[in-house]
Image (tube, rainbow, N blue to C red; front, side):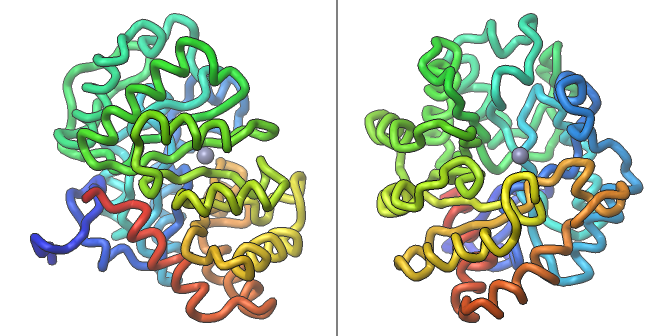
Length: 322
Ligand SMILES: [Zn+2]
């Protein structure tokens, strides 16, 4: 039940009290239409209702409560499907407005042409009124009643280009207007400290920021520490992703951050692709964190309170809209 004093998130099925989020994955992909992303990498297509529903139902069955879907507007997202998947499975889905890395858009895409204020309005409308329906090459101004709940952004080595400056500016403006959280894809080898400073200069509330993929993008934990000290959330998702590192390394990294006193800043997800969803024949599947990784982490010294923070308490603070 929503209480006017309680914090809430904007899910695809409307406002949800943060008390009802449950076990939360803060960065996933459960639906991606075939498009530019698929042309770049064929695992970036997740488009079977039957399989995506089965994956979410499996997550629900093991006690999963909420996922953040990190596919933004105009980049293969389908708001109607996300809402249907949430209704059918009972899993809360927090969808993304915002933008991805520019390589995921053809040069003719509207994202290049829109002004910063038009983009601000687009992002804000998606958070407050509802998400656009068919939203890739041609931006439809019709929208459905499912709202986005987070602004996705992407930081890579082209950050200084006019397009990224415009897009990040729009994301900050919409975040301030709607009190919405902002998640940032951090690319390997980039400097997230530079980005944190930029956000600070722009007057963005740093506790409303989530820096994603920090575990695979930034090897130096001193950098994680500086980011966390600013109040920014660190999202880790390089579990069962052996081209980067094994799970032993992941556990060590998390334990080190906990020991340094930053259990309150850690969020987790699996950053799923088609290849990582078991209903599509992939592995490890959405149940892996809860069923396999959490016991492993506990066995290596994480306390019950640490687990509660990472999967229950921190997501409430990171994802709330007010
Ligand atoms: Zn992702």
